[in-house]
Image (cartoon, rainbow, N blue to C red; front, side, top):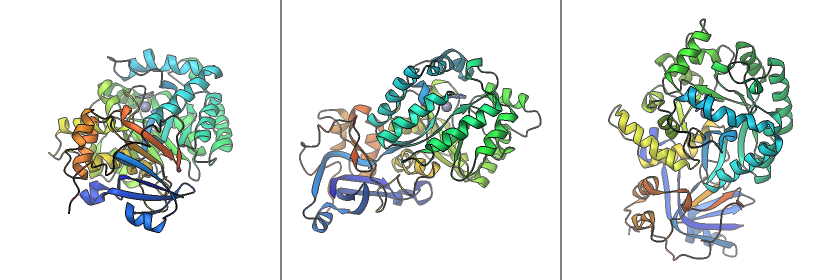
Length: 448
Ligand code: GUN
Ligand code: ZN
């Protein structure tokens, strides 16, 4: 067994409902981990008393947080980040889709899969709902890579039968057969799950959406895009004249359930939000993508008012990086600009959006998303470099909420000092900080 000692911070519930009470923070905390699972959690000295002979890994400085959960990120677009200045449909045509076509070549896809998965781990993301490739061989490479790294990856073959370039299209029969084969090969292997993934209704006819409905079974996830951009919404509505709205194009095929995660939903109607609330469908909010493509300001409070769960997605390559706290900060900025009801997102809500909310959206919150006893130890240690603005700021934090606020304002990928998957250090992160650092870490003053 191993005791992880540090400033341990997580959310035990939903701060949009429970307020700041959802935050748990142990300044000098201990997590006792056996076979990748948390078996005790308390102040360090108490955990130590329980396990006096076990190894102690001291994570001095910064915060130890649950591994981040990215609920919308495109594996074939990791090399396409940075295409700025275009709205969605132009960006897809000029930037994203030409790159996605290159994954037809397995050698190319293998390199991209490694870059993508290592990129996620390097920024502390241990779980992700990954928007896949149009090519089954590329999906095998992604799944194999995620399995080898022991990551919680939910993903699936992207299917489409119109609008896109011909190389990215398939027939309804091929969509069904290739998806079913991938489900057989990968769903339930290690921590992998399958997600049925039509690209969006614009590129997917009723015939393929119907096949998607047939594939949804058991705990298979469904994911797609929804209401991202006004021109896209108008095009979908004109292609489906008999549907009530964009969401209805999915709903008619049984694709709106509590295992559904819809990316964006910036331009949602009240009727759509009501249906999502009734069915338990989730929205993946992708703030840097919505900003970069000029898609609009996500109505987060309206989602929550309709009972719709919201988590965060980086939406790389339209999003501007994989580091989820940056999405949290951008979400905060955008809600400030929206000014809906005057209530800003607070730091506890931002932590929840980056961790437990995502785990709930992916249906894996029984295993990960926080540091409750019984859960798997997936963690990220944010430990700012000495002399950095974040290091200076953390010394002046007055309490855990204040420490979190400073982390969301200032943290960068270079502050990721360690990442663990079920108790095993991720190969891509350095453990150079592990030996050093004074104790106590003092991210906020100790209260008497
Ligand atoms: N809608 C359909 N495909 C995509 C994509 O790759 N990125 C984004 N942001 N929206 C999409
Ligand atoms: Zn997307």
